[in-house]
Image 1 (spheres, rainbow, N blue to C red):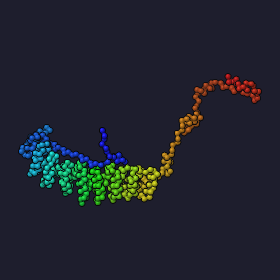
Image 2 (tube, one colour):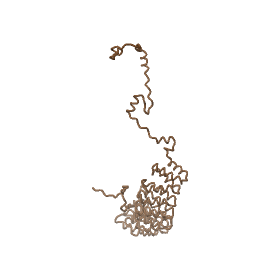
Image 3 (tube, one colour):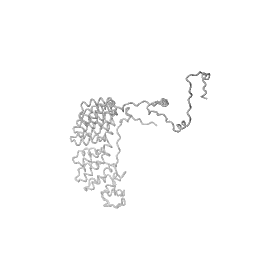
Image 4 (cartoon, rainbow, N blue to C red):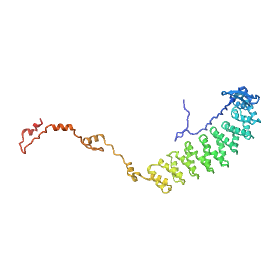
Length: 429
C-alpha cells in the first residue's frame, strides 16, 4: 500500500503548510439535571405549559418539575421530533416570564444543532432584554454557540465585542477565543476588524488572541502579527511580540524578519521578546548572529545583557575574544564589563599558575615494553624511584653460619702451568 505523500522543508524536514488548516469539530455538552428523568412523551407538553407539574425521581431524590424544567428537557429531543421541540423553544423565547426565557436561552445552543431557524434572531433580541438575568443567559448562550455556529452568530459577536457593558464584552471575547480553536480563519477576520478600531483596549484584546491562531491560520495569522507590531500602542506591540518565539518554531524566516523589526522597537519589553525569539532560532544562521551582535551594542541594558550572554554559544574562543575587546570600548555597565573581561582574557597566557596548568598537554604514555626494560635496569620513567630489594634476615643468618671461603693467595710471581694455559681451574670442581 502506497503512503500519502507529505511535502517537507528540505532544511528542517518538517511538513510544509500547503493546505488549509482543519477546523476542530465542536460539541455542545448536554445540560444535566432532574429534567433528564422526564418521560420523552411528556417533555413537550411540560415545556408548553400544558402540564402544571411533574414528579420525578432523579439520583435518589424526588423533584417537582415546572415548565422551566420541561424547556431544559427539550435538549434531549432528537431526530423527527426536533421540529416540535424547535417550535416549543420559540414559544418559550417570546414568553413574558423572565425565568421561562432564561431556560429557553440555556437550551438554545443544543436545540439549534437539530434546527436553528430564527433562534439566533431571538438571541440577538434577548441580548438587549430588560431583565438582567435574561441578558446574562443570552451572553452565555452566545459564547457557547460561537464555535459551533460561526456564521449564525457572526454579526452578533461583532457587535457584542464592542459592547460598553463589560459582562457582555467578556462573554463575546470568550466565544471568540473558542472560535480561534474551531474556525481560526473566521476568528482572524474578527481580530483584523478589531485592529482597525480606535479603542486601544479592543486592539489589545485582539492581539492577545494571536497566539491561538498563529499555528492554524498560517500566513493570515502572520499578517496579523505584522500589523500588531506596527501598532501605536506599546501594549499591543508587546502582546504581538510575545508570539514571536512560537512563530520561530513554525517559520524561522518570518520570525527572523519580525524579530529584526522588534529589536529596533522603542519599547524595552518588545525588544526583550525579540531577543528571546532570536535565542530560539538556528544558531548557525548568519542572520541570527548578526542580530545578536547588533543587540550586544543596544542602548537597552537588558537587551545587551541577553545578547552578550549568548556570545559564548555562537562563537569560538578566538572570535569571542576579539568581539569582547571591541565591546569593552563602549560598555559602561559594571556587570557586563566583568563578563566581557572574562571573555577577552586568555587564561593560557594571562591566567594564574593553576589556570595555565589546565592548558598544558599531558605527558605521552610510556610503552609497556620500555617501562619493563627500565624497571629491569633499576630505572623508573614517570614513577617513584625503584628501591633495591632488602635482603631477608633469614638469608643473612644462613650466610653468617657458613664459613667464608678463603680466597686463594697467589704469589707475586709464579710460573704458568699447562693447566693455566688450557683454562683449567681446580677450584671450579
